[in-house]
Length: 228
Image 1 (tube, one colour):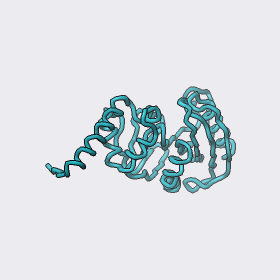
Image 2 (image 1 turned 45 degrees about the vertical axis):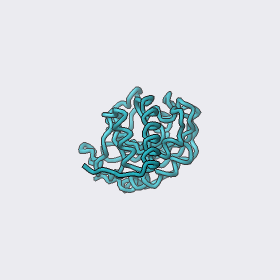
Image 3 (image 1 turned 135 degrees about the vertical axis):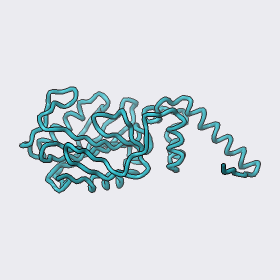
């Protein structure tokens, strides 16, 4: 066991900080859902999230058994999709049918990977992706479904453009919305049609601070996507 020897003032300061965190964690059942409602506010989480070790500790102390560190790679055998995952992120296991991961809490930042087979009805709808759909039609279907979700208020598309994803012609769409707690969010969606499946990568984060902070990591995820 490793023991840390601190001076009395430093020990007292650390104890006060730990008690502050404990009080906040008592009010959190799911840090990903409730972080933005903490009394101390986002500033508290900014301080906590500076250390990845502390982030993992926060999730563990809050009883988040539904989270686990991401693997080095995401793989979907049916579609042949392989994607490199960013180190330090946590996989939110109940986030099916997609693969959902977060770094600072689900309400603050998340990346989601979705693989849908052509012809299969999308959850909660009768809409389907088809092999013959060009990228702009896939973009229209994707953004319309995302904008119709109750968790996204004031959904507004900012830009849709063609993009190369997994070596194929796909699309890239940017949008903004407000989450159920009134927090302004930004969304980036990248989608592409594969041989028998549709692949979509989503990145949404709170405002400018978190969106810009993790954007490079999302871009690396998109660039690493590969499929036969």
